[in-house]
Image 1 (tube, rainbow over the protein chains, first blue to last red):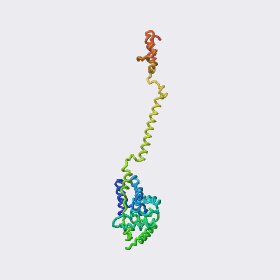
Image 2 (image 1 turned 180 degrees about the vertical axis):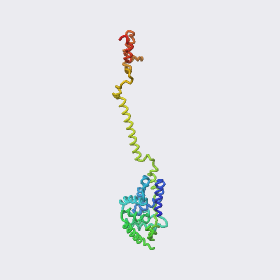
Image 3 (image 1 turned 90 degrees about the vertical axis):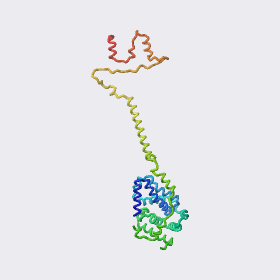
Image 4 (image 1 turned 120 degrees about the vertical axis):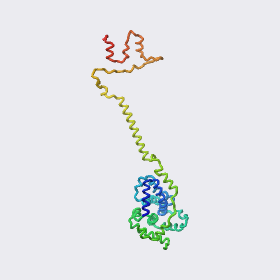
Length: 172
Length: 148
């Protein structure tokens, strides 16, 4: 609910003043979009940024057209997904980006574990769990994005969580 | 809503594992450089195409106007040539003819034609200067009334 309000505010700001509105959209979503491209589609950082650039370009070039977008978050993920599919198609069997292993910080080891666990999931499950947990998308939005029905998304998510628990040997 | 109701602790655990990748500054710069608010309005291809089309239309219109006015000045309509006299009294139109062209000219500037010069020399035997004067029938009749 809070995210919905934020998105509405962002869109209102964008419609009023595209430059300022885009600044806020970029601040809110740019990192998350890059992460989605890297972890869901296993793109390198450069490829992920290219894809994000492609997805965000209409927002800086045609503000009038983009102001009419109803669900900004779902739209951003959908356009990035298309850009990523184009790139991932060429290198579907590539390895995980090296940057992930080299990250530093208090939870580096855990994050790397989660990232490697995500890689082990089938592509659809990986994307579903990513969009649900880190993308804050609803099942309905994910279903529309992946062009499948709601039940399929729910089961993909359930299977993905079960598999992740297994891989991470998670004990509550 | 659904996620709030069926909150699995594992979901909360995963959510806490935020990733570290950041969008680079170059991505931001690239987007900023192609932003419509950073490029002048007249640089957009649509505006350039429209301006060019407008310019072509204006130039064509001006050329058409010039061509039409040139044609109109060279062709006098027949109605204008044979227009009826405005006044009820018969009055012949005064035709002002241009002076005869200078066929040859010596060093000193003499505006008289050779024939006129010959006439002027042989005065007053032959005064045919009216030849060079504008032809006006009424005036001629008045002037030479005693001879007619």
